[in-house]
Image (cartoon, rainbow, N blue to C red; front, top):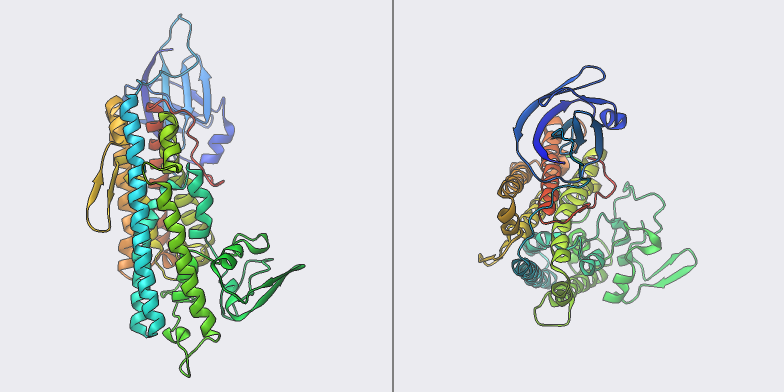
Length: 496
């Protein structure tokens, strides 16, 4: 089969309806116009040569050619791709045109530099966590509103490199298995400390009102737990207590809750307002059980530092660690992990779990940094992490920029147009995520954007979701250029 033209068109209709009809629903009339059984027309937007065939969900054949559908956007807008096959009496092949092979030596350099970027990112995350511990120690030494503000600022700063590291979670099992103790969310904060009487916990969660800080023992079913010693081992063991994923006792979000307290503003303006006196001792102390709250905050921060030290060690060169396994594996597997991580964070995690869920439910409990109202920044730096991996770039917290061989180099060497499209999509998603940051800087944070009836806010969030979905399609196209078929980024069971 000789692939000759690709035509893009827009269908302003119900995506699911078109999808269900499948074969027979669309007739190919000519090279520029399509229509369905109801005579709804699709207009060609552009036409250009291609010799690359990706993975598509729907294959409709006729004597005029082959029509295939891909989902590139949300909100009722379907971008579809038509591959028109030239008529020929010659036998037709069943597969796509094979892309040129990348240089294996260069590919190995790309994978090795990916590991360098991971090491630099986790090293920065560790350094910022240590700065956070310094500020927390200062808060505990002298609990004032100023020292509490400084600790909160340090927490926000610590999120900058860490959120850029999440692109390494998907595809690298060693990171995914480790991540739950470090950044699990959402959490049922009643597990850790006091909560408002009207707090609505996750239904059926046995730890929803455990209040570890106020309790020296806890009974879950037939299991009796001794909470007297707030050790790192104990706190780590309480994650997913009773089988509930929202029982999170450690990591960034446990620290966030301790520094800010509950955000009781719903989808109105304002973050958590825990007073510094919750960490005081003596007559000015508030909150109760302050000695245990102070201990909990100190121990959980030390545990975060220890966890980050473990991950830094996994990426050091010249050691028997995960990096050595990655670099000893095939180049194709290394590149697949890179692209899978990009696509999965872009689609299922960031567009799906972190934005679509919160927007659909109008639920501030489902926003990522719900106590601090820092969600906009976390989303932005997630997006930056995806860009870092593709371009082989990382701007370190000290201002230096790490650069090296990249996926972009490999793709551009074979298909410059696809490389340019993905870079354009990465820039579009960056701009859309910057829109969340700009809104927050104007005093309208993510939890306000997702409020019921806020159509303008919903449009801002949906714009970011749409660019991430489109970006993922370009990531899959880039993977196909490198002969990485069926990338299948994790959708987290979301439909886009």
